[in-house]
Length: 229
Image 1 (cartoon, rainbow, N blue to C red):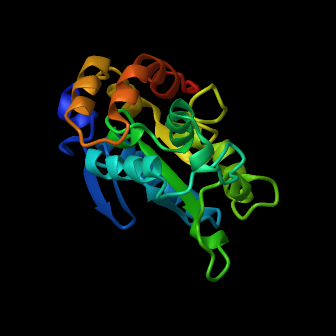
Image 2 (tube, rainbow, N blue to C red; image 1 turned 90 degrees about the horizontal axis):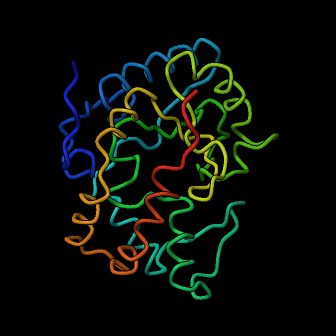
């Protein structure tokens, strides 16, 4: 029986629950890693060079992303991928704008080792810069074929899309795949009180506001995702 994830693992402060792969480069729980490599092999047989562009991420890296966005040093986007005016956002609206596309440090699925963002290298024109915005996955987009293929195959390998639809938290991210069994292992270890303690100890911009909003953020941005089939 696989051991439960501990508080440090589930909040991204340890990586003892993940394995590192270098070809392709990603870190994930062992079951998620094996499933992804099998999914990639199947995609290659159909002419798709399926690669990860994000997988496991430590707390410190997620915190840097948060602080850059909170400070206005990184672009914020609406649900359609259009830039937002950082200065025009009220404090709570700023928090929700960040969390539309980025997970909360300590609570993001990036810490779990179960979730992987993907793209098709074979579909990219020379010099193309990956954006991970909705237009890439839309009909006619550079990765439209990839996502049609994923629709047909990911469930066979134990994956699903936790952000297939907008449920009030994270915006739809069709490129974000989650290994269902590994994600459930993480969900079983989640604890809002542990998260609150980790955030109180973090050098986080807007920390007191986030802690005040935490019950709502927990419900909307952590728990309320599309379920595994």
